[in-house]
Amino acid sequence: MTDDDNLDSNEAEARAVESRAEAFIGVREARRSEVAEDYVELIAELIHENGEARPVDIATRMGVTAPTVAKTLGRLARDGLITRAKYRSVFLTEEGRALAKECRHRHEIVLRFLLSLGLDPETAERDAEGIEHHVSERTLALFAAFSKRS
Amino acid sequence: MTDDDNLDSNEAEARAVESRAEAFIGVREARRSEVAEDYVELIAELIHENGEARPVDIATRMGVTAPTVAKTLGRLARDGLITRAKYRSVFLTEEGRALAKECRHRHEIVLRFLLSLGLDPETAERDAEGIEHHVSERTLALFAAFSKRS
DNA sequence: GCAAAAAGTTAGCTTCGGCTAATAATCATC
DNA sequence: GATGATTATTAGCCGAAGCTAACTTTTTGC
Image (tube, rainbow over all chains, first blue to last red; front, top):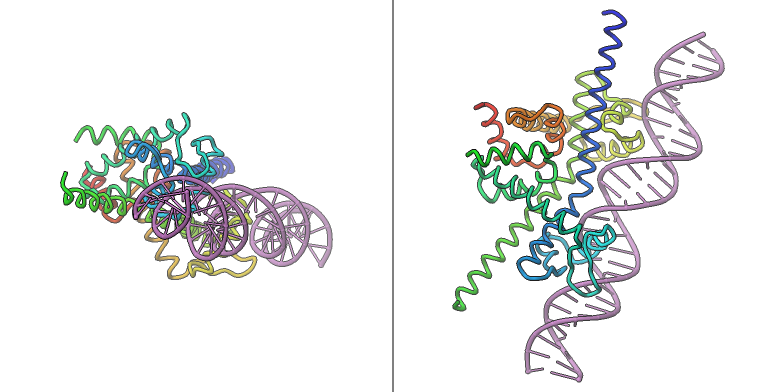
């Protein structure tokens, strides 16, 4: 092996390592917004169903306690995704509605895809909930195309 | 609508809400083990490639700083997944090796599946990293079957 | 074999997202 | 409209996972 080969392979290796690191960093970033996305999606759903989103309903549907909901709603409000008044229901801002719509769209594509693969509805719902935050635009497009095809 | 209908639909609704909550709880559980799984998988890889896993290499490949690695390794050691001596490399316990193997298996199935859908390798790697922690056994089996088929 | 560089550790800070216990406000019912 | 039940909030705890700054140990190169 010449010095040049050595350099080249080192550089190739370095690029591979860096791209892997970027993948991990990307996953960590996605993880940070997961909770917010789940809440916003659920809030949109509750408003659609009941005309309002009450913390108590968010709590039971998310499977967490009321104080956890309160704290998370604080963060969502801080980040401009919801508005709320003390002891009142929660509503989405324009930004929150946009995010909710996007999440619902992704969720549905992933869910339909899993179902079209032949997965049972219960497992499909459960897996979709975890997967939806980690699919790129490209993957989503492939999922959608596949479901449509079959 | 009769009272009976009302009761029935309420109960059905309650079951749906509960099952949804369980999905969220499951996702949160999966999230808790994600970091450990990523580390263990990477450590196995480094040992395979270099004969040892040094914190500095874990750090660059994970895209985090050395102190973060140190703290995480502390948790892994506490949880019986690795062994280590001060200022020395890290090694996997029997349990750690088993987990690493399982993770690698899952990772490869997801990756192959995404590639077989026609995704480019870079995106496939990135998405697989995020998705692998959220696929059930059933979904994994379907993914594997699909890749083999095509 | 010593000095400088590299690697590892420790201390201490932050945010997030859970929880319980206690308190406050609202709602519903009589 | 008082009161009991429901709902919401606050305070305060915890652990995970990130960071920087400062320090120690090990490795390397002369």
